[in-house]
Length: 121
Image (cartoon, rainbow, N blue to C red; front, side):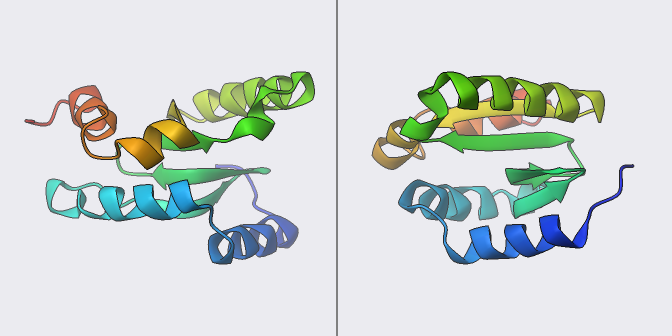
């Protein structure tokens, strides 16, 4: 387990209070998975990074990417973060804002999570 600095915790708290529309929508979908044993945390600090959503029990991170994630610098940053998270044993799933906003329940996010972790769909 890596150390989480106070600045990372403070930034995560700020991000939780300023969630994007797609993050808010997906949060309600992910919360509905609690009966299946998934307890996702929003803007969860993991080492020096903050995952949009993380389920520590299933070692799954779900990222919601907006337009900013298409710049060269952000693509490189996301790749480093993904490598770090994988090194910590997490599986990282990425979905676009548009994907989440237009089809949060039928777009395969829930099905992907359940299939990934061997739960019945």
